Length: 173
Image 1 (cartoon, rainbow, N blue to C red):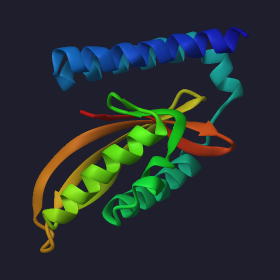
Image 2 (cartoon, helix red, strand yellow; image 1 turned 180 degrees about the vertical axis):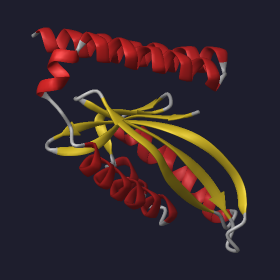
Image 3 (cartoon, rainbow, N blue to C red; image 1 turned 90 degrees about the vertical axis):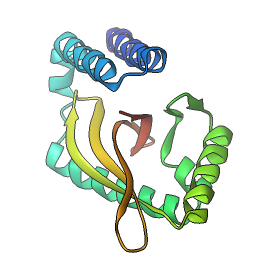
């Protein structure tokens, strides 16, 4: 029960980060609040995270593989497959619920295809608090000649669901 309460506090901090980012519109503030929440959650759950250690080398391999499949699903305009990468309570920015994720990713994939663009994701960092995996990376919209049309950074929070890593929170930075 104690672990659930602590995890709830971490989730609430992540939700505050999302609200601050959407309210203030600056990724710098969102990143600062995120780092603060990770520090708070790690310090608060240190004993629990020692019990629930995650092999980061193996986790990184799994996450990189999942991100590549995610990229392929987006580029193939398979919005159902993209939505299946998300946890049941997963969100993409403010978008919640499987039907909404399918719709949003369908629109995004069709828009990219209409513009002859593909998306490319690159994982930069992978860390963990023992329960969640935090991934930062770069996304790029590329043309057929591999020239980059647009790029940005992202943060994914992954959690285990039915023994599989699923996207819990998906944020553009």
